Every structure is written in structure tokens, then in C-alpha cells.
Image (cartoon, rainbow, N blue to C red; front, side, top):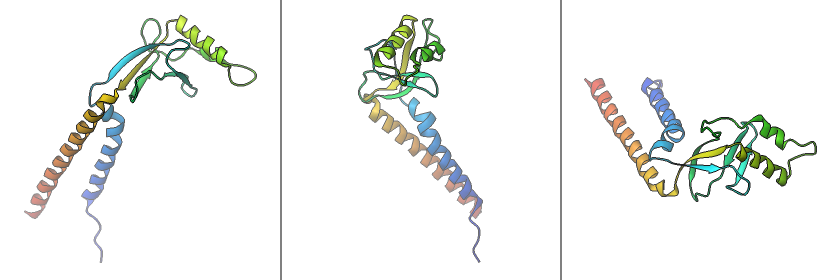
Length: 158
């Protein structure tokens, strides 16, 4: 007759899944210090795209190989805000997508209102620092798990 697996196996699987989800989402972007730049919103500036679902402007600054971790659109006073609804109204057309000239005019209007794009990113030069920091993190977790397993086995044998 087969014995059911030990209950600890489910806990280890849960911890493994939690680590594999949390490290890329919440820990990896903060391992080495990030850089931050503020890019003016202007026609002909850094390439810009609009995320329709969130009504957010996304700037693509000229930082080759960078990993952009966050973007915010602060107004003239420096406080992050969503893109104003007047921007969506400016882009609205009856006959389909806005023309390039209309898009540039709307971008210029945002720039005139003092909107900027604040971009936080990991420069390409941080690649190996990220790799080594994450390797150290996983090695530390592996050592902790090894110590826990040794303690658990010794406790169960006595």
C-alpha cells in the first residue's frame, strides 16, 4: 500500500512558487539602485506611445539596453497624475485613428501644460550586478532551506 506524501512537500512547493513569483515582480527591480530621468513630453522628442486601457503615456527614452521598471506622468507641479481626459478628446476622430499631425498637436498641448514623463530604469551596465545579486539571493535561500532540512531530519530521527 502506498503512503501519502509528507505534508512538508506541499509547504516546500508553496514556498518555491512564492519565491519564483515574487523575485521577478517585486525584488529584482530593486536589487541594484535604479536610475531616473525626466523626459519632456514634446513632439519630436523621445518616442511616445499611448496605453489605451490605462490612459497612460509611455515614453521610450534613449537609453540603449535599459530595463524600464516604472513610468509616471507628473504635471507642472511635479505630482504624478493620470493623463487628462482632454488628451483623449484631442485624439478622438470620427474617421478612425488620429493623424500624425493631430497626435503631434496633442503632445505639444500636453507639453505646454507642463506635463513630463518620469522614467525609472535599470541601465544596461547593471546587468551583471543584477545577475550576481539574484544569484546571491537564491544561494542564500538554498542554504537556509538546507539548514532547515537538516534541522527537520535530525528532529524527526530523535
